[in-house]
Image (tube, rainbow, N blue to C red):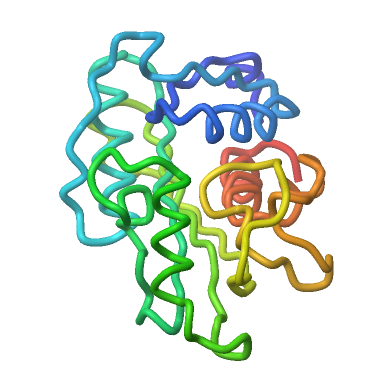
Amino acid sequence: MSETHRDSSIVLASNNAGKVREIDALLAAARIRVIPQDALGVPEVEETGKTFVENAILKARNAARHSGLAAIADDSGLEVDALNGAPGIYSARFAGSGASDEANLEKLLAVLRDIPEAKRTARFQCLIVYMRHGEDPTPLICQGTWEGRILFAPRGENGFGYDPVFHVPGEGCSSAELPAATKNRLSHRGQALRALVHRLGGLE
């Protein structure tokens, strides 16, 4: 990353405390300081897109326009094969608008109750968008995908969202049982952010 980008601040188009912690930790090594949008008074934008990338672009452009800073937005979610890719872009509101992580998780387990282990394959998807300014016509777009399957019951206390029911291949545990450093190395968000830092000319 060039010196003009070092020790810079980028507004993060999210108020999700879990996402803020993960993204801040992942970008700290690139000497990028992440400021959550609510700290700058940026209002949330309605996520009217039909895909992860459309929603990420909406959020990044909104944050950049209101803050005057470069902005990062991620739109991410869980795709379950037995549900034809649901909850997908509706992962954060699977149990309804404003639903808690616990409510979303409980609904997922309920609808998958009779699905056998072999058919509980799933993946986390993350689309990261970086915009230099609010009118940026060529935002950087990076994607990460994390394959796994859905457990029958929650396990672990770390992470957030669907982490307690997402079994990680090769680790023998749920995402919520992984140490933060291991999760950041393996996860969809970690993959997408490392790709973004690389494209910005930063760390390999």
